[in-house]
Length: 137
Image 1: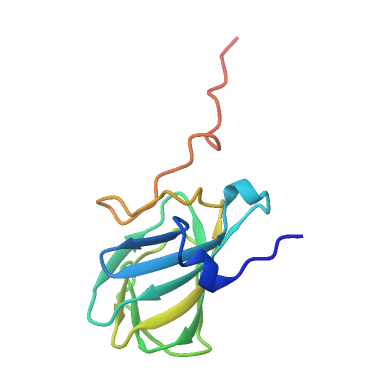
Image 2 (image 1 turned 45 degrees about the vertical axis):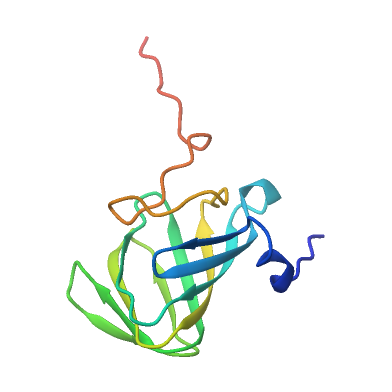
């Protein structure tokens, strides 16, 4: 059994901050759950362009308001408490928090805890999860 306190996590290196967001990573790859679980705050006034090419993510909005734009379709969805969105097709998107938005997020495959978004808005692939090339006979 794993039991962790959000307040304690926020005082450790599992609390990762970057431009426009802070993420308390309660479960990581090393915990062996097959997914990672984060409590993330998206800061008001930021524009967060992301494209998780190597991960699937589900997000539940707990507090705050804003929008998420699907860059493939141009659709814009309101974000408010109780709204969940799932990036089930490695969707390119922009989140625009009107207020600080508190979320609970799940990533598959799990992140290691050291990731930050690269220039494309993605987390890098975990090299340990990459498949070895198959040798041709």
